[in-house]
Image (cartoon, rainbow over all chains, first blue to last red; front, side, top):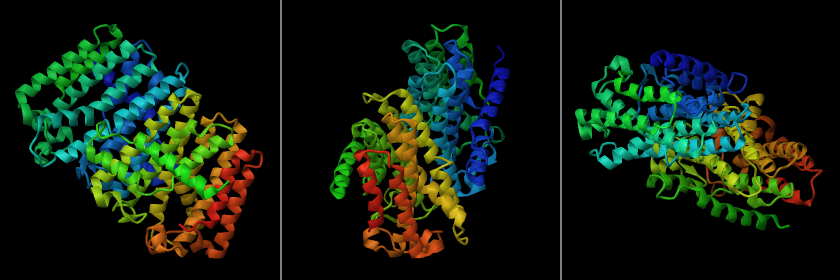
Length: 296
Length: 296
């Protein structure tokens, strides 16, 4: 299996589906449609949707079964970036090298485009019931999982903790809480959602949840490392912006060397969570290992 | 039936339920929980939840069947007010006579409290599956209905149109679009949600949807009239704020007299939509008529 090619193909598939699930100009005010689309197509890697699909495949189902939910996770991720970049929040002008939503469409429209993407996500998950082979009970459970992971006890909770920690000295427990929630919760939800829709048994769901948790950790640690080591032109934002904003990061607390080892350990645990899975979980194993070679 | 007493009792019930469905301090960052709670308990009439319950009762079911979804509608309404009041949007310092969320908790927290309430709404609707007598298919359909009504083709779409119309001369079609979506769509969703959860047949669902549509219109027209005629201490915001913001309103386009008659006509049509319903739809009929006597 060639991971790079796999990721490219999956990204292409997801981009096509995202296009289908975004509102068409006759469905909503034109500028709103444009702003939503602008941010969704501002260059994401589609990692969360790819993980939703890979989870379904790991338990032996087709990726087509979970496509709407895969797109919904990307909508939620995109909305969180739009709101995160707002002047009242991180006040970022650039995201992945492109002007942020509020720089292009203004603050009010950016807030509303984020709101609309979040709401759309739940509409699109509910449409997953129309895919043959998916039952209603699974869809309701997925909505509960995703809402929980994205809300006050998950992603938004992490954002708030992040906000409240700024300008204070980095504290270990706070940082762990921030990362487990701000980034980790949605990854975990992506894996669980794929597993539940695919009709996995509870043991497999729990294993994929563990994978998601460790994956999220490894993702965040490598992200923090990149912020120190990466190159501006590759990550699309100024290197060292976390330090500038006095954000608590793995390197700032544990140092670079130990952070690397922690990322390796999380990847090992993610892969270990899949020990009872067949070769169909190979993409998930490879994607986890791939985190350690990230350069963007 | 004494409507005032009915509304008070229902509001009390909903307030208790809202309290249960809001995050407890051990579930999420404390300030976030506080901000969500502050805005939810800043004095709403609970009209949307009351309509969800009344719709279920109109088709012969218990109000208890739909309580989680009723609360979810109030969370969505509250989130929309929080975001609407932000400096980048309407920039309001007061709402129902109390400082707005961002005045108390700051802009960033207000954005996140709104996001968290919107997300929580879908989590809470998904919990409606746990109520005996509710089936999963109905819950998924309700999520689709509510997300559609609240999103880019509904409430958020209306907000965007409202935003884009400000400072321009009031145009009739635009105003109708704004009101049908900004306020109407969520009322319509409330009625449909109650009906679908209660297992109503398609004919009854369609009738309640028509009621919701006309109710929303009458609500908006009387709201516009109050903005001209009401007293600041009763509505909790400066009288004439719509005129100040150059918002297109019914009175500004049709004049006060004709606006009154249009509100009456909408109420009549709302009541007419229920002509095949028994005495169990009496609360809905009375609530609609009540709009014409609003003084707050």
